[in-house]
Amino acid sequence: IGNPSLDISAHVTHEVLEKYGLKAGNAILAEPHHLPLFTEIIDHYDVSYIGGGGTQNSIRAAQWAMGETRFDRAR
Image (cartoon, rainbow, N blue to C red):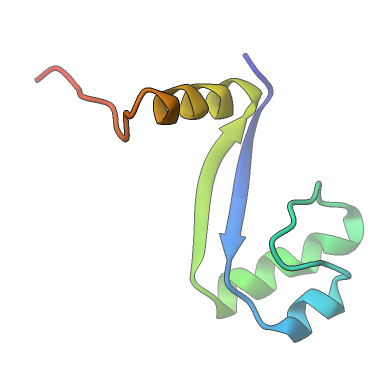
């Protein structure tokens, strides 16, 4: 439901951005020439994996608009 995706985020050097033709702060849909980037950033940088996709991003935006920052779970 909602085209789930997995975002991968890392702070990398300007050289890495140039090597793969990327711009700082941009999001891309990976293409075949980006595949080596995944191994490079996982091996050399602190990587964050963020679940995303249309539905999940909409829910996050709604939570933000309502002042919610986390889910409260019943115990």
